[in-house]
Length: 87
Image (cartoon, rainbow, N blue to C red):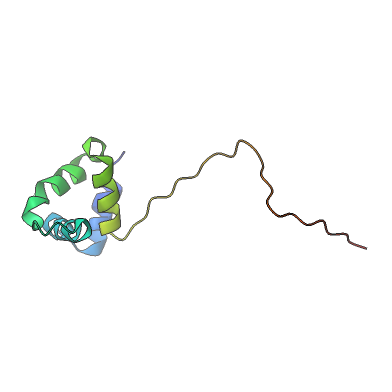
């Protein structure tokens, strides 16, 4: 995973890594302070691949983002279908 989109988002927000660490502290509701998360944020911004999944999810949320998963459809499923006749 490329770190550039995350660094670009941080720049767009006008945030420093410390500011992102503050948001991470709010999301995790630990009240440990941003200093506790600064190195986690810096490591993530350098190499997202080395981060834990929970860190990834929390930091995306902190930057007001969302994760979207699209599954490839293997079968069609119809739910509550009504037949309509056209004259």
